[in-house]
Figure 1: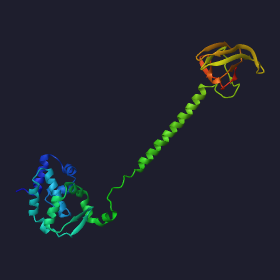
Figure 2: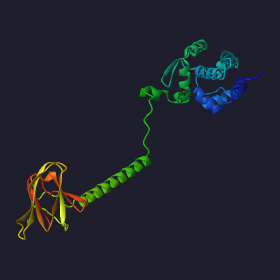
Figure 3: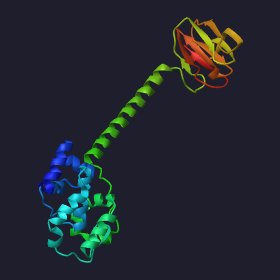
Figure 4: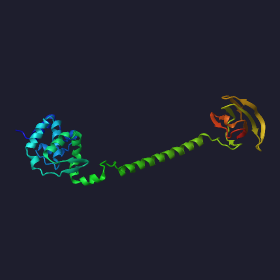
Length: 274
């Protein structure tokens, strides 16, 4: 006749699973399952837990659980075990143990989930019941962040900041290079040596172009007061340094040799082009 352990081992192997896989499925520690299959039932736990684990394992392996429990009881384990105190606290469960009949009733009424939860805490509960009772909670603490992860995150953040600063500086330089005529000072100078230029109206604007005398005053009129509509372009000669008046500087751009420059002022004023 096969022993309990032989029947358990044979059923497990027939299902083609390992001890570890069975432990994960039943939520029972693998060393307990290994002892069951070796006919070693001294788990240093209360009798109700041993019976509960054994029943759960038998049900998982599709063996007759009642037959397994009866064979286990026939081994005389319950009579040989030392009588437990009338009330003991295991983990967070208050278990009453007074007699074999009460243990059987508790075993029948205990939900399978309670039997599974006892697998991970039963051994520690027998050693530290008082500590658990005082704490009032067995919630696990949150995982600590590894120092190496914090260090790597700091390096990554520093690299991102450096790249942003480089990008910002390059953008500022390129912006200055692309708009050499930009400014807010009235009468600012645009240095160009082309013989002609184009006035481009961004929005409606009134313009006037004259020569610039050596003393900086207005000379010969090249383009009298002219109203330009939005999008209109007017080409004018540039015999030398000139002065350009605009009723609204932000509405006018100057195009020289295919490159546009905004007027260096807003509102009504003039700009000098050498």
